[in-house]
Image (cartoon, rainbow, N blue to C red; front, side, top):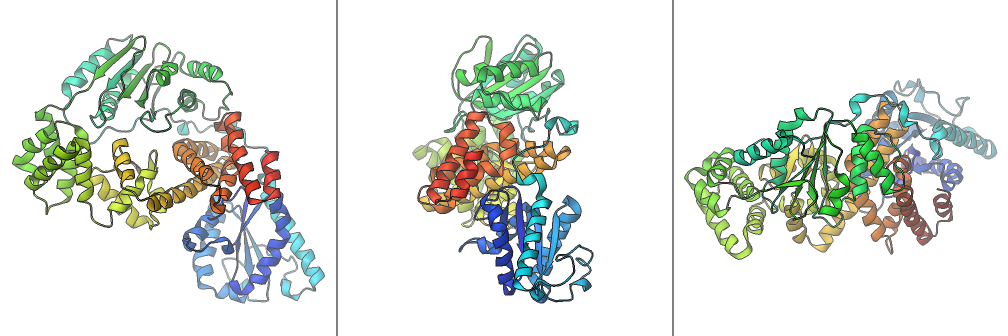
Length: 592
């Protein structure tokens, strides 16, 4: 949607021939909207150039109340009857969406079996068009008041459901390890050394260190799966993003662990208090913590757990901590490299040794080579090896392997891969579809092809780019291409934030589902909010987005952000409201 909606929102379904009635109802709701008590959505909010169907579908998904302005033209509209009414009634049946029929013109609406059993307005069954103007306004006022009543307490940011009431223990995320690559090959000597070190006991913090693309994460995941039975209470994973522009702060990493055990915990302001909760959550437990891509000692030191737990760290950087045992990971032996190539692409055949030598045993380069050859039956392994060797002489191994994989992409797939660089962390297919402005099915097909070519990692509906691939892909984006993708990314994750908040508000098991969705997508949400804030000046759409971000997720943010962080988001929203000259928004932000 072009304007992000705060909870709660009202979706108005109407025929354009009845626009005058839509405008009259919107006028009666306008005062409530100015006071921040609801948000009214009609298709007139769709801007030039936007994907109109997607905007309508998103608005229907986010609505808390749906109003049907019923007339002969409403009943005759194919789009309304085939797309809008079925989805709204489905949400009514499954999620309790309030659907309010309002009869604006005389028609045979009672013969429409799907809506004839719904209590309509006006109560006397007369269409609004039959009333005198003063009586008509009285009825519209009653309808507006009823809509507000249906929204109930959701129209105000307080109170929220009590997290303590959510008892669905199956939702507590204590076993978070992603699987190692299905084609994991070799590394037997490295695994044996690591296994022996862990089996000795007494090790609280262990590290796997090496250059980018050398296979640190894959090895750490393989080891973690093997030793998980020694740490039955929890196996927790977090990407510390140590090579990105925004490494995860220690307080946020500790919060991730705390919430694995206590999802509804509201964190204190000071890092010292968070550290105390972190140690308390792990005290007396046998838990494995895999912290991937660490930036250095200052990021890792606060995460050292109490005795009985194991902190496993991967990093490209050299650093030292007391009791920190480190395994430096080298290139794969030729035999293992050959086996990996042939497992992924058996047709490499007698070129396996040559390609393995060119790739010098670096798993990232080996996987890209094998993935590309597997997906390009027209490309001979010998030809690929020659081109890779030439590129390596000019560019270096990793850039050469990425460059060759990129050059061999189909023309329509190359820009799609480039724009995936806007995701700072893992993402799902709907997010990629939004960034690409594509329908779900072709999006999933394109992602599958990129996974097969080893340009994207994919598992269980989640995707990610290796950080080296992300940098390479971004370097090939034009400014226009990058800006458009980032804009769509920011808008999408505002909607995801609103979805998490809506789940939280439903309470019960949905409360924890909302918090888990927030936690899963937090890095993308944070990036989207920051991008909107950075581009708000002179851009009305991004200013509006920066304003709505903290309101779209107001309940989750109260729990998940420390007060000073949440105030920072609200200060950005206040600046945006003043830039837009919207006094009502300014007042709402100050009130929060």
